[in-house]
Length: 81
Image (cartoon, rainbow, N blue to C red; front, side, top):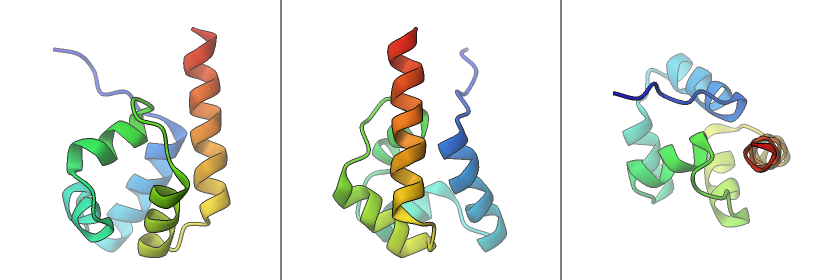
């Protein structure tokens, strides 16, 4: 069994989810994506599109630029491996 990859992006979103008493599955439905796609974004397996960034930002109130910056940092760390 592999350990769950924790990224700064997932920490930010998961902290918001905790404070709201919401699960990732609920957020995924709210923003119109599958839970596995949202998980992929948060772990760096899927690229965060502008549309997905805007949807997550609208649903959570987390600044869209912050989401995109964290996603780009995640992509950079993935490319460095």
